[in-house]
Structures are given as C-alpha cells and as structure tokens.
Length: 89
Image (cartoon, rainbow, N blue to C red; front, side, top):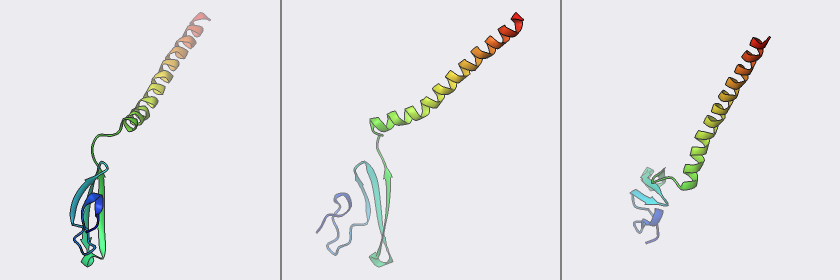
C-alpha cells in the first residue's frame, strides 16, 4: 500500500481512502466521483496564524489608521494657523 494524502494509505488498488486528513496545518478532505475517475479535494487552512502573518495583518490594518490620524492632526494644526492668521489681520 502506498502513501496517500498526508500519510493516508490507499486501499491497495491505487485509490486513496475517502475521508479527511490533516497535514501541514491544513484540513484536507477528498472524495471520489465517476467511479474513481475523478478525485475532488478541498483544503482549509486551520490552526493559528504564523507570527509573521499576524504581524503583516496588523501592519496592514494599523498603518493606514496611523497615517489617517497623522493627517487629521496636520489638518487641525493648519486650520488653526489659518484662523489665527485671519484674526491677526
């Protein structure tokens, strides 16, 4: 019997066992159709995200927010300067 998906053994006839497996942090499900001529696979990443992926997601979320806050503060400072200049005339 050979190795199937993620360590699942085949049934001895070259067909991998029907069902689900978990490998490399992914849930993998297989099904056979058309008398075994067609194999359908579906994978879903499971488990916690890696540290670098989490960091990248946080940067993608917080960087635009920080830029928006900085631009808001700049706009407030500039509008106060303009108002002070108008009042000084």
